[in-house]
Length: 490
Ligand code: ADP
Image 1 (tube, rainbow, N blue to C red):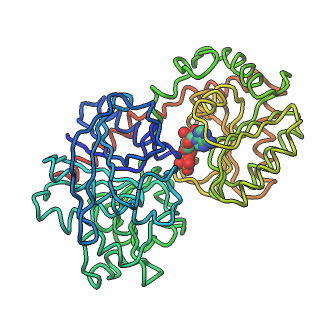
Image 2: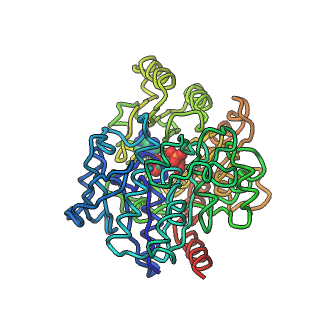
Image 3: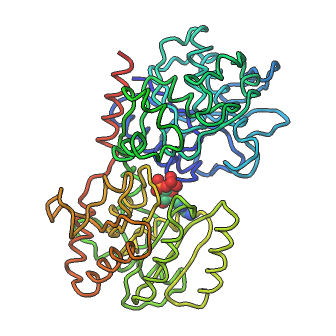
C-alpha cells in the first residue's frame, strides 16, 4: 500500500510531544511491514535540521490558492532517519512556519489550514495518488473535508482518509474566514451542525469535528480512551459527534519505536543494558547524578518527564516530588510548561530546591537528557488527569523504570498493578496504579513502589524486569492500522 502521513510533527526532527513519536514510529513500522510511506510536514524554522539527511528542493513554485490569490511554496525533500519527508515552505508575508516555535501563535488555525491546503495541492500537482492519507489531530482535520469537497473533483477521488485523534482538548476552532481562505466558501453549507459547526459555539467551525465527519475511519490512541471519549465526557464536547459516527470510530494503542527507545543500543545513555541483565542501570544512575549534581547515595530515583500542564496532573507531580524526597528518595523532573502560571510555579520550585542534593528540576525540552533519565530512573510517575495513550510509561517500562500511574486512558491499557490487578497473572504485572486525583491516592501507589524498592529490592528488580519484557513495540498496532487501511480502501 502507498500511505502518506500528513502531520504537524515527526520525531526527532519536529517533536513537541507524543504525536511526533507516533508519526515517526508508525511510519517506520509500516515500511518494515512492506508498505510505501511518505510524510508531509511544515518546514518550520526551528526544527532539528541536524536530523534531516539530504535536504533538497523537490518542487519549486507550488501555487497554493489562498484567499482568492495564491501563495507560492517550495517543497523540500529529505530523509529523517530513513523516512522520506516532504517539507512545505510557504513564501508569504504571514511567515507561517518561521515563528521560532511549533504551536501557540494567535493564528494557529490559519497556519494549519494553510498547511492542510498546501499538502493536498502538493499531492494533486505532483501526481501523487496514495491509497491512504493518514491525518493526525486538529492541525490536519480540514484535509478530509477539502479532499471530499474539492480535490475529489480534480481526480483525487480514490484516496481514503484515516484520521487519528491524539488529544481531544485541542480541536482547532475558527470563524468563517477559514472557508474563504481555503476556497471551501459556502458558509451556510459548512456551518450546518452535521458538518463543521462547533457543537457549542454556533459561530465557530471545528476542524477536529470536520476530521471526524469526513474521514473514512477515525481512531484515538488507546482502546480505553476511545471508550472514555464516547461515554465519559472527556472528548471536550465531541461526544455527540462520535456517537453519530460510532461505526467508524475505535482505539488503537500507540507503540514506541523500538529502534529509538532501546537501552541495549541507546547512544545517549552511559551504559547499555537489556531485559536479561539490568545491572547497567547503576552506571546510568551514576551518570545522571554526576550530570545533575545529585548526591551519589543509595536512594531510589523517581522521575517525571512530560509537558507541565493541567492534563499531566501537575499538582500531583508537585506532590510526588515532595513525597519522594520526604520518603528518602531522589526526584528528577524534566518538563516544559506553556502556561505562564505553571511555568512560574516550577521555576519557583527550582529555585527553592536548588541546593537540595536529592532533587533536580530541568525546565525545557531535552531529548538526549530524557533518554538518560529513563535509563537511570527506578520509578517513573505519570499522574495524569487524562491521558489518551501516554508514552512515558511505556518508554519507562522499556528502560526498566517502574511506572506509578493514574488509571485513566491508555495508562489502563499498559500498566497493571503489582498488588491489585485482577486481569493479569502476577508475573505479567508491571507497575502501580491509583485512581483518584488527590494526594492520598498518589501516595497509596508511590508508597508501595518505594517500599518495595527499599524493603524487597530483589522483588523490585523482578518487577522492573517484568516491565521490560512487555511488548509495546509498533508491530501489533501497525498491523491493526493496516487492517483499517485495507478495510477503508475496500
Ligand atoms: P504528550 O501528551 O505530550 O503527547 P506522551 O506521553 O504521549 O505525552 O509523549 C511524550 C513524549 O515527549 C515522550 O517521548 C517524552 O519522552 C517526550 N517529552 C515530553 N516532555 C519532554 C521534555 N521536556 N524533554 C524531552 N522529552 C520530552
